[in-house]
Image (cartoon, rainbow, N blue to C red):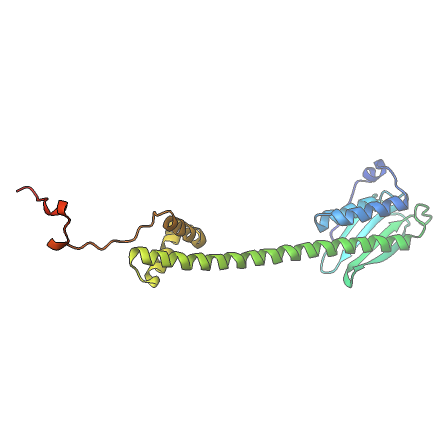
Length: 226
């Protein structure tokens, strides 16, 4: 069991709220929480600002029990439990501990169920955001792979043409160069494409000896010193 215990003086120093104020604040927090741990703690902290409510316990599936109490001293308390579930997604249970003669809540069981439902809605939202983030990451990785294949294929073709190589040989050179320079294949391929477009990747020119009939008039009159 993992217990998150709060100082008794902390909640006593906060302004007490009505049930309606607590429900409205809990709803806002469920929509804005950025992570499950801090979100659940924020919901519990609002609940504990109700006069006579002394503890909130959250039991999630396959996780430790989280507890928030305004006092470490044992006392006679009532309890109400709500199912942390929303939109066919069940997370666990939530329980509130309160004074037997609680006056700040019209119905402790109803409040426990509302608090549990808001916790479930928050957890559902955070789970959906996480799935969306994972999906975007997977799509981005696929886009990078596609861009790399397209750029590498073009770079290999340009390199093979400029250096009079086979595509297989040009591809091996590209891979070796990426490893030696510790650059990504995509970055190196784009660099080769840019060099070709700006004229820095020059083709190999085959040199041969010109015949007499191919010499220009100026070249035919030129002779090396004896």
